[in-house]
Length: 500
Image 1 (spheres, rainbow, N blue to C red):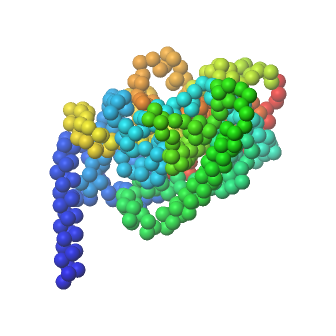
Image 2: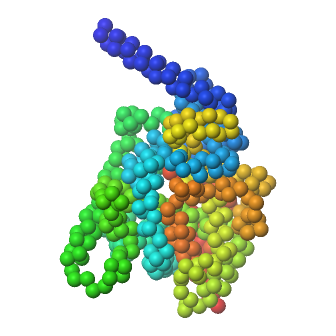
Image 3: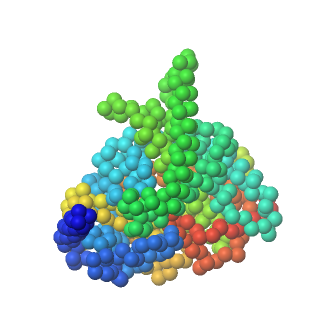
């Protein structure tokens, strides 16, 4: 009898909560609902028990049905799908719209720049961290990036027979990770103990997070913790946290010891040029320093973002260049013109001269944005297309779909064409039709860092090898694991170029 009474109370409370959410969502009545949608549950069946591949295409198909704004109903709760540059500009340019929704908590990196949900707190942290990617630092990173790129090319050279099929992402991923370890944490070893295991566990975490974000049945923590997915994510997270925390502890001790030594140069000369050292020594305006947890969250965020996104983009670029040999020939011609012999140094100025190469990278990021999906949460009322959107509503956007709109990219948006980014072709195009690094104040802090590392890796790969593949662009299938990942290997073959 008591059990029945308790069950009735719980049921009544759930019904009340549903009705309250349903009443709160009445503002969205005029916004088209993505179909199929069902009574009470809304679109939940479309996002229940999906693999990372199935979940990505469920999202893509949903956005394909939206011109400006639509909605998915997670039971009584709407998620607004924003798919037009006009509306995205209003959202991303607002100075009071930096909050992020609940599913960023799944990453459990609350203090990181990407995952910090509180917009005001994020803005304060961003201002403090902006100097960690200044021009002086970016310049100091170039020799490190080049050294690691040359090492990668040497490793690839043993397979450059024009026949052996290589999964390029494996080698590019190792290169980007070494670059990140060197520039972010000041670790100068070619490979740190546990580095390969770290990559494996990070990949597990990203897979689990991507699936969880796209599956309503995994949203509630109490249910997610009962799954095998949680167990594997938790074990991998422990390994990755221990790995980064050990580096933080070691570097903190080293800095403490260095401060005891006599200083022979001024403070400007002595200032360390890596992210970890700076965040360990930064003092905020209120006199406080970053806590160990905040340092760990930011370091973890930087490592994950810089490693995954750059590795994927370089691998996708090589794959698409392999499919388009004429474009590959134009890239290498430009590279040989700028870096005509070994005496030409890699500098910010010489990298800027790789204009066609940059257009190629931009076109790859248009077709295959490394982070395809983003979201914001309103912290005050917002007027979009005549709809008054109240506080605490979720706004989602999808670069994969946005970058394929025929009204901004022409009748064949799937075609790989770097000349879309010629100045004359870009003139008049909506500035928010292309946002691979997001946009507005909450854009990617490491955008220039990423572009530099990608240009250097491509320079060293393409100067040394001709790249080919048996894959076609129509063969490519993708999945969502926070980043946009290829289903299957990035299969290419390499052949050494004849030296001029």
